[in-house]
Image (tube, rainbow, N blue to C red; front, side, top):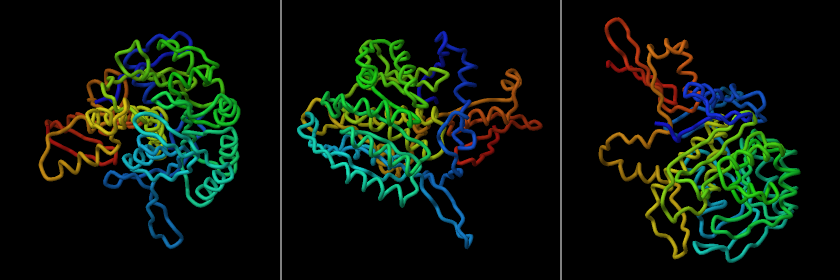
Length: 411
């Protein structure tokens, strides 16, 4: 089961590639740090291991004892008193994805499901103190930014990341809340362009934010989104994800991912719900969490899009607040597990982010080995790979899980 349909486009002619080409291109980047593409600024890190669904890292000390280190995301953003977006959304997302999340708060907002009633910006020197406290002591893998309400805070963050480099920087250029409230003025744009975007491994603007970064260009079609992604990429970030959730003419939720070479059109069903507050923060935080685990950029984006879709669908009927836009439920998996722990449940395909199936006959037809097929699937972010092999007269079914365990089943 794929998290969303994915087409690959060449930046030269934007013509869709064949299904085989999509597979090869989409699986070309690995989630294992050692397979990161050459143009990535993400520094290589030891391989993370999975322990009962929580990703961690085993390290050796001088006395040969083993310590478990959890992947670590630092979010630099504003506080949302309604807890649907901002720091609160980042914390819940990282918890749901099994990574540790520390925080640097840039502003405190008074907001609810109706809108934003007030913003109190944290002084720049105290933002600096927070950044130094976390980055000088804790091993941070990925920094994710949200609301940066002043040009001074943008510059403070820029200097801190130069002093304390991390493996990846995810920039969510928060300027306008989903409800339409302005959270950062035009003066911040220069800071984004000059300081943050050249450092970013990915920037994730929605249509309004992409338009602002490009001087007010209107984005109304998917082609407009592709052009915007390329123009923003020219400002320095390694990857760009233009989010098209507000694209009026589309029945699907369409995002455009551009890695500097190829465009990827990521589609998922549009969930009909009023509970969409904090979707942008959640998506960027999930990308940061998956990068911290060692996933490739494209795989992290796909997982994040599927996670947001699942969370929106799970919480589409909840009623919190009296406004037009409510929060959704980030911790759906934990609640689902708790509800189902006492009774046997049928297999739920929604629990899988990616399920790849292949067999020896098809691999022979495509001219690649079983090893190559498994590697391509894992590098593409597959959680389970099913192989059908014929050994003597018995057909065996091999299931490769993301934890690298293998199950042999007579078929």
